[in-house]
Length: 182
Image 1 (cartoon, rainbow, N blue to C red):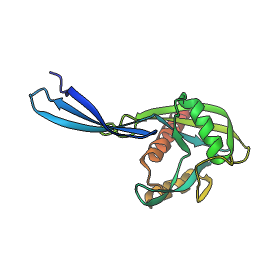
Image 2: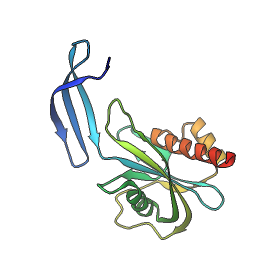
Image 3: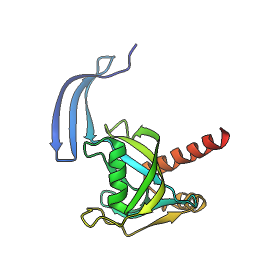
Image 4: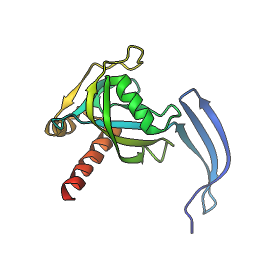
């Protein structure tokens, strides 16, 4: 027996250039009708940029919805590009970093009970600094490289409080473990 809800009707209750909020009328397999709201947004990317010392680049940013500051991996929306192209653009625009080597680490839904957005995580290495783009709309309080040990402490004390960043860092740790066992 399927546990999937069936959609009876759907309407968009809000939209702007970045998101749409849907309200669907649904019915469960047991016959219960209800509404299900969800947010549709473009897919996104996170970049684990690693230098020759195996340090990871993070940006420090204020996030309006949560009214909080935190350290994050660079990343952003796909802007209707494939996510590798978007990752290269985001890394250079936000940080001024260009990477010669790229590898996909994984992908996951950001919040699959509430959003359609899927995030891809890329490893960027063999880095050079080209200078931050003046026309970038992102502003950061700080940005720099950190050791994995320091990042672990930052996670424990709440300085890294973004789930997408936490997932990206875990993908990188898993990649390192797989690399070491092969």
